[in-house]
Length: 382
Image (cartoon, rainbow, N blue to C red; front, side):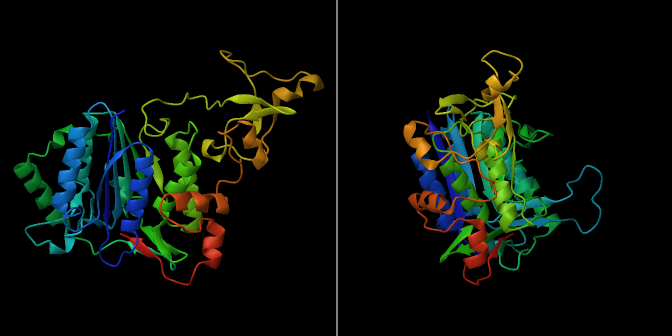
């Protein structure tokens, strides 16, 4: 399959994590077979550089898979008074490396209107599109904690952004008519925070990482070799991020039942496969599928519309409770199995190894991060 990705790390205004985040995401996507356009320098991650990269992504996307990833600051502009009917209640924008060179007549951010329009152009070429935004206010795009550094900046004028969008539409012939009233229903969108929320980066050991990106990479590493949906990835990421920053709610939008970087979708039933195992049966599912220790199960034959219910003690193997499987069980051929533990608790040793393989070496257990990390102030990505 033709696979292309645009990965942007815009490390500006006090942030320390976006370049490292972008490099680790680029490494992960490269292992998934993507040709990655990594942009982290001032020239390549400038407003024009990002727009050019997105246009190239659209050009390469036909019939394949496409990913746009951004890590950096985000801004949100609100009107000074109640906007007239039909007007936007707010505007959001990502912050390229040359953002500080903006003038009253020349805004160098990239607004949510522009991002959404570029995504519409992308999904006109391929339905297999994924957008990942690790910045504040990201829920409305494409579509704090005392120990954390916010990924946010001073807010530009609402009227300035209105004028900027009108000028871009006129000068660049931005096809805003492609925008859908209910958002883009073809693309999967993973966002670090709600429309009015901050996203955070923090020290893990001696490395500054975006908590959302770190959690996403852990989830994708654990999903390796499994048929996992974006819904399962989103659940894992959301619960882990909330366990570290209670005010940051990550989310996933769009066709949630799609398998990763694919257009095929999981059946709506939520069923998973069962294989024989010594002394019973084994579910091919784990926490990324929403399975937890103690969950009840029912078995049904292929093609059956209802579950097989045990009638007596001789048939108790048809129903049961989910339990943890010893690690050495995987050696018997069950490569898809993962421990079905509490999704908030990441297996620290295995997760650290997974992150290290992708270019990091950060400790990843959330409880240990909070309890043992050096006393440094993480920052918001506004």
